[in-house]
Figure 1: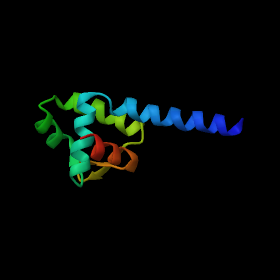
Figure 2 (figure 1 turned 90 degrees about the horizontal axis):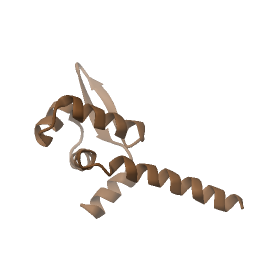
Figure 3 (figure 1 turned 120 degrees about the vertical axis):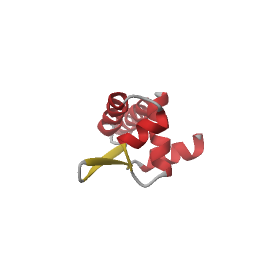
Figure 4 (figure 1 turned 30 degrees about the horizontal axis):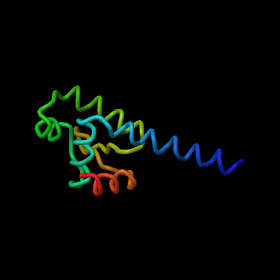
Length: 94
């Protein structure tokens, strides 16, 4: 019974990750971060053609899901893809 409960929890975590990257903008952000070693919001905004506030909201969701991490460099925050499972998904999917 414990194995079933553990499996269910693991599958729920995986489903949350898939939900987090399922939006087209978030998928594009994750793809860009998988290709580059860090990127700030301004660069992502220019690449996506989306307002800064929109990009920031999507980054917040990815950060909350444990997919990306932000690191301050002076006045800018650079974001990095930190979830290796997501990196593998992107490599296979895209």
